[in-house]
Image (cartoon, rainbow, N blue to C red; front, side, top):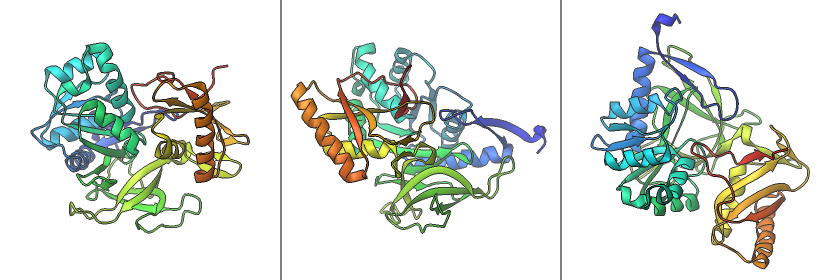
Amino acid sequence: MPTSEIVQTVSSSGTSGRSVHYALTASDHAKWNDGIANMFFTAGIRPTDVIAHLTRLPMVGGGLPYADGLRKLGATVVWAGGMSTERTLETIKTLQATALTATVSFEVYLAEHCREVMGYPPSSLGLEKLIGGGEPGMGQPEIRSQISEAWGVTHLREAMGLSDVMAGMWAECGQGNGMHFCAQRHVAIELIDPDTQDQVPWAEGATGEVLYTTFSREATPVLRFRSGDIVVVTETSCACSRTSPKIRCIGRSDDMLIYKAMNVFPSAIRDVILDEHSDHLSPHMRIWAEEVGQVKFDHPIPLEVEANMDLEETMVQALSGRVEATVRERLGIRVALTVVAPGTIPRTDYKTALVQVRDS
C-alpha cells in the first residue's frame, strides 16, 4: 500500500508494551467511522448529545477515531482529555456536556477528585450518560454502582474495541448484561479455545478468545487475528432486537497469572472478592509481582485490597481470613491478603494495572 493512499495512522496504547502502529486509507477511515458510530449509538449516544471525550492521546484507537465516529453519529464532541483534572471538570461544566466517554479508571479517578478540586460533587455536573471501556471493570456490579452513585448517572454502558482491527466494535445496549458486536458490516468474529485453538460455539456461558477478520480493510488488514481478549458469552438474544451475541471481557491472555498450574485473571480475583465482601472492601486492589513480566506464583499471590471504611485491627484480621478462604474456594488458588486503609492505593487517570512490581 503506497503511503500516498494512507490518510491516518493509529497506535495501540502501549500499556502492555511498546506501541504498535496501524494505517488507514480513506476507505478504511470511513468504515471505522461507521463502526464506531454504530458502537456509540448502541451505547445510547444520540446526535443531541454533547459528549466529553477524555482520551489524552489523539493517536490511540480511543482518540481521534472515537472523535470521528462520534462526529459521524452527529454528536457534539468536547475533547477534554489531556488537561488538568480541574480544567477537565470545568470544561464539562462550562460546555454543559450530557455524556462522557473515558476509561473506567479515569471515571473513578475524576469522581473521587471532583469535590476536592472543584468544591462540589460530580453529580452536580449534570451528566446523563457515561460510556466506559479500555479495561475490565464496568461489568463488575460493585464498580458500576460506585461510578453510578458518584456521578448521579444511571445510564452506564460498557464499550470495547481493538486498535489492530477497529477501535470500537462492542457496546452495551439499554438491556445491559454484556456488549453487542457492532461492526458486522466490516469485521467477522470467531470464538476459540485459547489453548487448543478449537472453535467455540457462540452459546450462552461459553468462554474463549475472540478472533477477528477484516474482510474489506485496505491497509494493514488482519486474517483470523488473535485478539488476546478472553470473553464470556452472556446472551445470544436480546429484547433490544439486535441479533449479535453479547459478551463481557474477563481479561487478556497476556494478563493471565499461573498459581501452581492454575490459571487465573487478576480481574477474576477482584470479581470474587467484591461478589462476597463488598460491604467492607472497595474495588481498588493490586497484586504484587517480584519482577516485570512475572506470571507464575508458587506461593500465595501477594494481594492488597483497600477497605471502603476505617476498620479495627481485629476486624481486618478476621476479614483477611474470610477473603482468602473465599478466593481459595471459588478459584482454587491461594492469596496472601493485606487489607489497607482507604486511599492507600494510588489512583490513575488512564488504565489501572492490577499487577504491579514492588519498588526495589
